[in-house]
Image 1 (tube, rainbow, N blue to C red):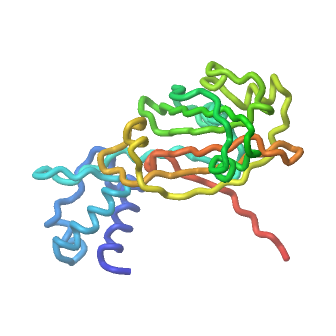
Image 2: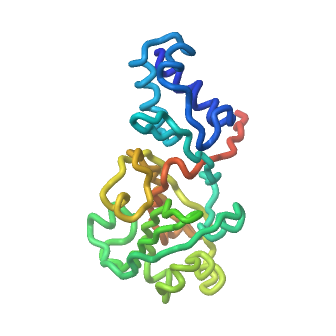
Length: 238
């Protein structure tokens, strides 16, 4: 590993272990160059990466200050609604519905969503506020012939609660794709991103009922420094 990579790893470990605490200044570039026995240029390269990873904020003439790095545990393998996640983790949240409407599924949309060509789907865009900051952007497409009389009010509360408790649908499983994407214009417009944020975590899901019928396609875009994505992995004996 290159020298700046060693410094990045060490600084991040010390931040997560609270050796360098939130709102505290890191040692100066001059001090860090002595600690790690390297040039100030190498230190600057390491600090740039730590800043891009959302752990510090560098201020010209002031230094590098440790910022909040608390992250919510977001289960990868589970199929959990945002409302259920909020209840289980106990964070304060608010949902704002940006778009609620219907669209016809053309060839391009059919390829993306997996829905039948010429079918009709609800198109819903919601942003989620967590502890006072909009940190999640959810774009959902749901087949209208399955989702029934879905409303904007239901979307603001819990779509899954309506589907399961009112329509008695048996939601079974999802195929998920998780990528790290560059922040786009819509992310900047609708999310309270940090100034240094360059990337966002995208979770795309095709969701199915117990009879293997796909009824939902969704993309959730998450601020990178707000969540830790977790999964319990079990060894498969062969």
